[in-house]
Amino acid sequence: MLRYLHIKNFALIDELELSFDQGFNVITGETGAGKSLLMQALELTVGSRATADLIRHDTSEAIVEAVFEVQDARITRLLEESGYSAEDELLVRRVVSQNGRGRVYLNGAVVTVAVLRQLGEQLIHIYGQHEQQTLLETEAALGLLDGVAGLGERGKEMLARHQTLHKSWARLQALTQGKEAARARRELLRFQAEEVKRAALHPGEEEQLRQEKTILLNAEKLARGAAAGEEVLVAGEEAISDRVGRLISRLRELARVDESLKDTVVLLSSGLAQIEEAALILRKYGERLHVNPERLEEIDTRLTLIARLKQKYGSSVEAVIAFQEAVEQELQQLEGGEETIAVLRQEVETAAEAAWAWARQLSQERQTAARTLEKKMIQELAGLGMKGATFRVQFETSEDVNGSASSEGPFQRNRQRLYDTGCDHVEFYLSANPGEPLLPLAQVASGGELSRLMLALKVLGTAADEAPTLIFDEVDAGIGGAVAEVVARRLKTLARHRQVLCITHLPQIAAFADHAYTVVKTLVKGRTISSAKKLTKNEQVQELARMLGGVEITTEARRHAKEMLEGARKT
Image 1 (tube, rainbow, N blue to C red):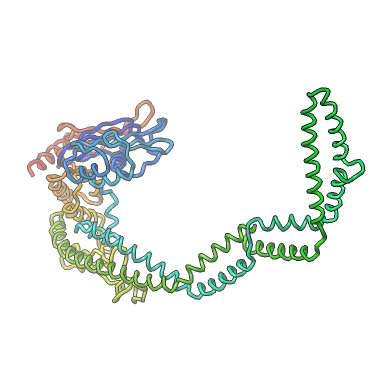
Image 2: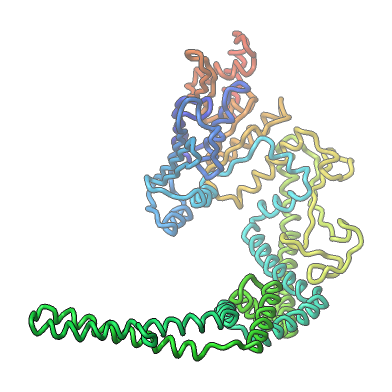
C-alpha cells in the first residue's frame, strides 16, 4: 500500500509531500492544475520510462520518492529473489538527470529499471483516463478477458509455444523453399572448392615466386658481380686476402718486439678467415646462377594462376586459402541439408502439436470464463446505472475474421488460425437497453457507457489483480449526475479491500472520499508552481463547493457540498 509520496523539481512541481491511507483516496483540482503530474510521478515509482523533459526548468535533476507498506508475501519473495532486503516498508527513489543517466534505489540499494518495473507490477496498477477507448479495439478484448479471468500466465505460455513453432517453421521454410537455389549453390561451391584445391596454394608463395623471378631475370648480372667480388677478395693479383696476409706476417715479426701488437694480429687473422669464407660463398653462388627460360615460364604461369584466383576469391594467397576453407564448410552443411530438413520437419510437428494443444485448452478456459464474465458484467452494469443492459463475449473463427481459411502450414487447422495469443478472436458486444440488439461496442456504446464498462471490467478484474493499490485516473469521463454517484459507490466498495486512489472532476465522486486531496497551481515570483495537500473536513467542504459552483463559491454551494458529504457518509 502507498503510504508516502515526495516529489521535487518535477515539471511544474517545485517540491511536495503527500501521505496516503487505506481506503478511498480522492484527488481533485482544476483542469491544468497538475493532477496528471502526480500520475506521471507515481508511474515513475513503478518503472515507467523517464525523460529529461520531466525535470523542472533551471534544475539539474528531478526526484520522486515513494514509501510502500509491504504486507504481501509475493513482494517479499520477489525482493529476496532479486537479492534485496525485504522489510515492512519499501522506499523507492527515482532520480531523473539531464544527461539521461537516471538512477533507481530500493531501500537505498541501486537497482535497474527492469527490476523496479517487475516489482511495480505487484505494488500498483494504474488505469488511465483514456483506457476505456481500448474497449473499441477488437484486439484488446482478448487481453481484457484474460486479465479478468486470471489467465495471464497461461497466455505467456501460449506466447512461448508459438514463438518456438515460429522459429522452427522459419528455419524449415528457409531450407525447403530454397531447395533449387541450394542445389545451384552446392554446384558453385564444389567448383570453387575444387578450383582452389587444384592450385595447392601455400602461404607466402606469391612473394617467394616473385623473388625467384627477379633473381632469374638478373642471373647474368648477379654472376658477374659474384665473380668480381671473388676476384677482389682472393683471386686477383692485388687480392685483399694476399695483402692482408702479408700484413699479418709483418705484424707478427713486430709483435716479437712489442707484444701489444698480438691482439691486432689476432683480429686481422680472424678477418682474413672471413674474407676467404665470403669469397667461397660468392664462388658457389655464381656457380648456381644460370639463365633458365623454362623455370621463368613456370613462375609466370603460376603467378598468373594466383592473380586469377586472387581476383575471384581474395586479395591475397592467404585470403584465397581462407575462402576455400569457408566454402568447404558451407558445402558440408548444404550436403547434409536433406537430413537437416527431416529433423526440422519433426521439430515443427512436435512444436505445432504442443502449441495447438495449449491453444485449444486455453480456448476452453476462455469460453468458460467468458460465460461467467457475461453474468457478472450484467450485474455490475446494473449496479452502475445500466439496468437491463446485456453484455456478451463473442468468439469468432479465423474464417469469420479473415475470409476463407487458407493453408498456412502448421498455423492453420480446421478453419482456425494460430496466433501468439492462441486460436481465439474475441469481441465485446453490448445491448445498452432492453429490446435492443447486441452489437459491437464501437457501434453502440457512448462515452459514459464506455467508462462504466471499463470500470466494471476493472472491478471484476481485481479478483485476479492482487496489487494492493489501484489508481483510477479520471475513469469517470463522460458521466455525471446519478450515474456518477453510482460509480462513486462502486469505487467506495472496491476500497474496502484495497487502497484506491481516484483522480476526478466530479463532486459526486469526491464526496465519497475517505481521504481527500487537492492539486492547485499558483504563480510565485513569476514562476508557475503546482502543489498538493491533504484536505481537512472543512477544506473538503470548500473544495466540493468549488467543484459545484465554479469560480465564485456561494453559500448555496457550501450548503450543497455539506449535504453531499453527509449523504455519502450515511451511505
